[in-house]
Image: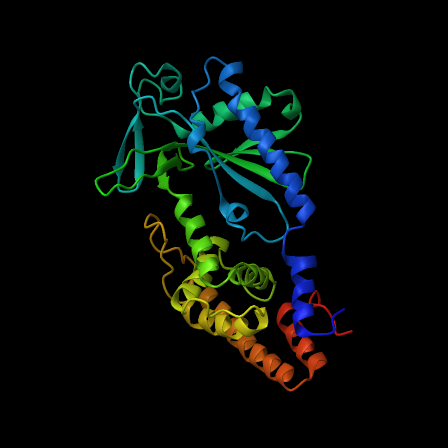
Length: 333
């Protein structure tokens, strides 16, 4: 129950959108312990590749602080020492070539080849993780580029082996991760995390809650859901386009502008900020149209809700926001 629009949004964030603080704390503790065990794998298995702990990195929405409930997965990239391994980029498909002296990596190459097979690397992680007594009864499997560790928590860990390239001609380095088909691909979660942090700081820390509440809106069963990473970048594109310090502390003030922006820009390309994946907007035209129509209808309702609040009609304003966010949006007290 809420007495004002602001308290209603705060209650929605606390109870339905933002991650529970205790579960987040528990998850981080579990993550730290897991990483500690992974770092011990080469000690327990003489055939396990040497790890490069300095390049370990968290990625995904949990790391960027844009994750909403439920806390269902935590993404980790675990660094491997390349030991002289080189790479070639075949139009986005990365091929890793292992030198003869890197014996543990050679054992994970394609048969009769020195081309490192990413599926074999992931399966090596899975086999070794199953040898840890605390994880012996856990479900550990491969899902595309990750080894997925399903514990007794509500969250899984997606463990992605990775390498870090040397700087190229432009001074840029890349993370190399499995592509899910035995080869490798480039990525760089540092850019994603830095972009979110910078934009949020440019607007006095007011961006993260808006991203999360729009992700909540995106998941409601009123339309097809846009892919989460693409949708996040669409929202960030809006915030990058407005002057610094121009975002209100009050979420409801920004929402009409965002909904109007989504209505129009869901039809256009959303380019990968890393400059690797190209256009992230893979939605069909039909789905774009449905999302645009929903954003347009909710933009009108949001504008009406803002006017009702300005007129001091707080109950009516809250009821209008409930039309947008559903019955989980707090009622007027």
